[in-house]
Amino acid sequence: MPTPSKSRVVGTAAWLGLLLLVALARGTGDKPPPPAAAPVANFAVAPYLQYATKTAITVMAETAVPLTATVRYGLSADLKGTATGQPGTMHELRLEGLQPSAKYFYQVTCRGDGATTVASPLLTFTTACDSSEAFSFTVVGDTQKNPVVTGKIAKLMWERRPHFVLHMGDVVDNGPDKREWTNEFFKPCAELLSRVPIYPCIGNHEKNHPHYYQYFSLPAPENYYHFTYGNAEFFSMDSNQFLTPGTKQYEWLDKALSASTAKWKICYHHHPCYTSDADDYGDTYKGGSTLGELKVKFLVPLYEKHKVDIAMNGHVHFYERTHPIKAGKVDRAGVVYLTSGGGGGKLEDFGPTPTFFKNQNRVDYHYCYFTIFDNVLEGKAFDHEGRLFDTFEIKK
Ligand SMILES: [Fe+2]
Ligand SMILES: [Fe+2]
Image (cartoon, rainbow, N blue to C red; front, side, top):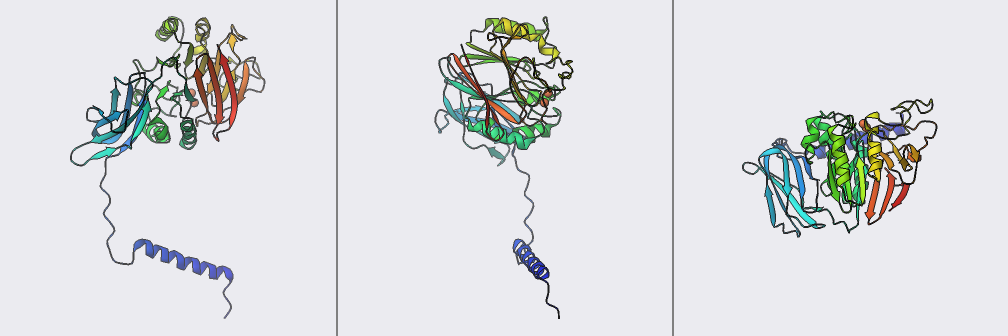
C-alpha cells in the first residue's frame, strides 16, 4: 500500500480537526438551539452633541423604536440635573442654565412600556469658554460613503480632545439614504460626537433632504447660522444657493459680520471661493478654470470688507491652503482660504500648473486642528495616519 502523501495526511488531520470544532461548537447533546432573541430597543444613533454655547447644549439620539428619553447631567457623576423629552424615535433635549467653560457628565436613558430601556454609558461634554480663554477645534469635510476612513479620522480627531468639530458638508453621499446617516456617518463617529459638539454646513450631497435638518439641531433656518466660541465667531453658510448681493443669506452675513465684535472671524460653506482643483471648475492647465465656485465668489468682497480671517470649505476632496488673498492678489492683509474635503469621499487632484494663490496642498484623507488663544491662531493638518503635513500661524 503506498504511503499517503504529506498533503493527504495534513488534509485528513485538518478535516478531523474541523469536525471536532463543529461538534464542540454545537455541543454534544441533543439540546434544541436557543430561541432567537426578541427584538430589543437600541440606539439607531448613539447620543451626540449639538450647538454648545456658554450656558447650553443640545443632546440628541435616535432609537430604533419609539421611547421617551431622559438626560441626567451634572458637574459631578451623581447627575443632579434632569431633562425629559417626548416619546418618539428622534430625541432632542436642550440643556440650559449651564455654567460657562465647565465640564459636565451626562447619561441618556430611553424608556418605553415595561422593561424596554436603552441607556448610554456615562459621557461628558464641555460648555463654550469665555473670550479670555484658549480653545481648539478640528475640521473635517466630505465624509461621504467611506465609513472606514471616516472612522479613522474621527478617532484621530477625538485623540486631539477638541472643544468642537466643524464639518464642511457632504456629510453623506446621498442625503435621502437614512442608512448612510446612521451607519456611515454617526456610527464611525460615535465616540467623538458623544463628547464633542459638531457644527456642520450643508453640502450638495445632502440634497437638502429633511435628514440634514432632522439629524442636526441648529438655530433657524439651520442651513445658515452663526455661533461664538471663546474670542471667535463662526458663520456657516449654505453654498448650494447663489450667494449674491440682495439674497437673504448674503444680506444676513453682511449684517452679522458688521455686528461681530469677535477677535477672530471664520466663515465656512461647502463650495470653494478659491481652489487649484484640476477639473471641477474647468481645466487650470488650459487656463479655463474659474478657480472656484461662482455661487460663492460674491462673498469674497464681503470677506475682505469685514476682515474675515479664514474662509473654509469642502467639496473638493483634498487639502489646500491659500496664501492670504485680497483684491485678486496675494496680500498679507487678505483672507486665507482653506479646503478640507478629506473625510472619506473619493480623492481628487490638483491642476498641473500652480495657481497664483496656492500655498500648501495635499491629496490625502485628513483633518485639520486649530487652536486659538488671544491674538494667535495656529492651524495644522494631519493625514489619516496622524502624520502632520501642514502647519501655519496667524497673528493679529
Ligand atoms: Fe464631496
Ligand atoms: Fe460636494
